[in-house]
Every structure is written in structure tokens, then in C-alpha cells.
Image (cartoon, rainbow, N blue to C red):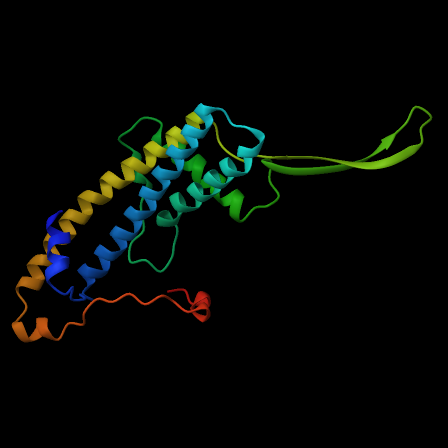
Length: 207
């Protein structure tokens, strides 16, 4: 049991709403995204190495689309207090190019339904007597990346988690310092942290 779990069993968690606290919440949220990407990409690698059967194709596509979405979220504009910057990858050869590729693939998956990686062509069947005898179609879609692609995505997510852990550690130290300077009266007025399951009506809210 770590120190945080030990404290959680004995003491209430008081909600901090300072800019530092908001920053820390965003950092932790992004870190959770990349842990999820690592889990998904690792599962995909194991599936491919074991041999992908026809029944596994949907599962592999699910891993791919879920991993891309989770990977891209911290880099996109949103309601979080922070946004990840691609420059965290500049120290590693080829990482920035891989990042750009995955971000582009995510955009095509979500926003660009008509693209070179997802095409449908229709035509007619013509027999030897030049008679049209039916209608047919040919479709193609990138449903997942390669084994190496999943490994690359996993490594990018690992780099992001390491970067975020450094930022989280710094932010926690700053928050602890500021909270320690608060008076007893100020601390007692802080609300206790509680989580309430959102109602269906809140699905339309941005935050």
C-alpha cells in the first residue's frame, strides 16, 4: 500500500480548485489516456503475434480505433486546462513522424470518412455478350495498423506517460506547498471530494 492509499483510508480528501490543482487534474487525466493507449496497443501486439483469425478482425479494429482516439485527445483543443505538445518527441529519431502519422490517421477515422484509406467503388458486371448482368462493389478500409505500427504507438504513449509523470510530480509538490500555507479555517472550508455518476442529460455538456 502506498502513502496515498494509506491516507485515503484515514483522512477525507479535500477538493482544491486553484490553478495548480486544475493543472494537476488535467495532467492526471492525460496520463490515464496514455496508460489506456499502452494497454490497447499491447493487447493488439499480443493478438497479432498469436495469429489473427477472421473472428479477431473486429477486435483488432476496436483496439486500433480506441487507441487512436485516446492517443489524440490530449493533443486536441478541448476543455482541459492543458494541451500536449508534439515537441516531447523531438529527442527521439522518427518519433515526430510517427506521431504525425497517427494523428492524421485519427483525423481520417473520425472526421474524414472519404479518404484514400477508406474507399468504396461500385460498378456493373458485363458478360461476354456485352450484357449487364448485375451490380457489384469493391471496398477497402484500413482497419488496423501493422505489428510494428502498434509497437510504435505503444512507445509514443510510453514517452508521453514519462513526460506527464515528471510534470505531475512537479505539480503535486507545488500544490502541497500552497496548501500547506493555508490556514486551518481555509482548509476546513474546502469541500470533501465526492464523485457523482453523471446523468444522461449531462452527455450534451462539454464538461
